[in-house]
Image 1 (cartoon, rainbow, N blue to C red):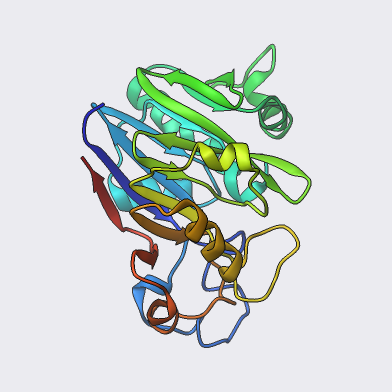
Image 2 (cartoon, rainbow, N blue to C red):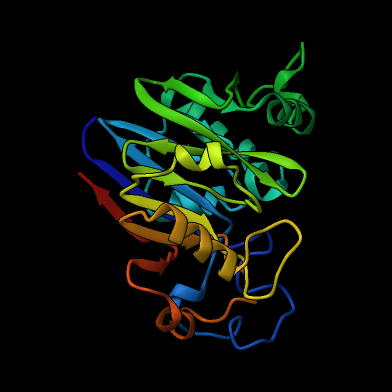
Length: 257
């Protein structure tokens, strides 16, 4: 596997940051690192571009990052902040003259079929997205020539998929990770993990829980994502983090050998 380039297209939680109608210090921050679109990353390896999650900010993210080619989409789960932008993938249908390959669990793919039913109708309206759904499960899969290890974590009671590509591991919307699935993440060069806020949350890791997982897995570098305005500003939280652990931010680019 060649060099891996990862671009953080969004690092916010389901409401993004700033939050509509909120006047807190984080939402009023002028630091661009505190402006967070819904969580998504673009992974490029060996000439292949893979998008992880297609949330409601997809159009803005693609335009901001100048993405002109996209080989496939990997979906972590079916919540709106991770799939609501799928309709905008039709721009790539037009540009690339082919359907878009989407890889998700059987439950996530079923949700995509329900939400975007018009894309799968027997008689489709001209211009609707052309989507090819592929079921993936925990284990090793090949996606357009890229070796991907699929990891399963729990978002309270909902299974969520994470992905490891070479030394890069991406986990979002996790509350618990079993010992067997943690073993798939060990030895990562870069681990991306959700850290919603400081106060405990029913369905997401808080900062202390995320740090405990990092202490167990000991990756070379950790970047927290899926961050809410309740965590604090980037500048105030960063000094509290141990060496090798950082807050990701929109537009951050990471290269792995």
